[in-house]
Image 1 (spheres, rainbow, N blue to C red):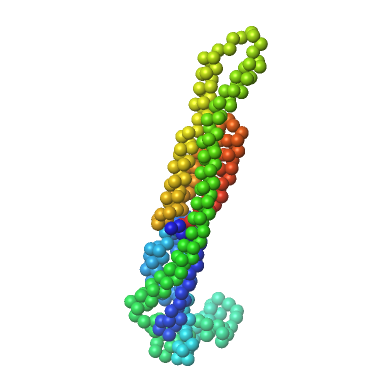
Image 2: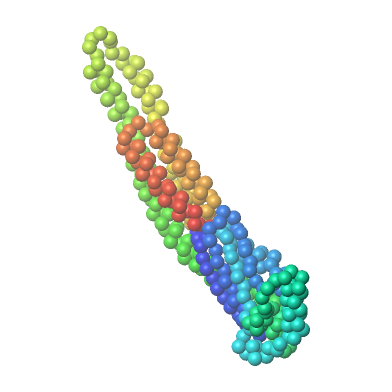
Length: 298
């Protein structure tokens, strides 16, 4: 199954008088980059949370946002921490005196500061339970949001894979038309060259069949594209295998697309046939579309 690198997941749970919400967003990235934003007193769990994300996602930039809000039931149990208020006010006076900073703290400012309001049972970081309980809660909530994210990435990935399968089918049609035309390139060149020599021959020079045959053989070897067509077909099959597999395929697909572009360029430089040139141009345009879509796959 192919996964897109774009997705969104969300979950929430109740813990210690708080509502904890988890948001996980992912976008394209060459590697797995995890960015965490959470309350400061939970940063000790950052490594643990990062490992959880990396165990689910192999590629993409993942933004994890964890918010903590007091529930309505717990809000009625909050009390004013006067020591915290005094500390903030004293710090504000020091800033004004030492640095000459203007401004006044408003009631809204003070109430929005950490630790000013706390539950009756104790400070906010203590009502969140023990370290093990908090760690388990964060792991559970993050995993739930990641499952939602993965579901969205899977749905998006299935659409991308279906589009890539369709475009691979078109490439196979172009490759088959090239293979059918390849033998005609030499025969058409032979007929045109024979006709041109006949038109130019005014009887002053003999027509040597042996040299004519050597010229045709050299041309046939120079414009032979059998190897390139075979490698293209092999690359098509490898792309299908990757898209049907369970492992992340984005980087390997990118490599195969580069190889298919290289084979197509070689065919274009070898073939001396207008229809084949047009087919290579059409194949390159389709490969560019495939490259853009594959860039979204994990």
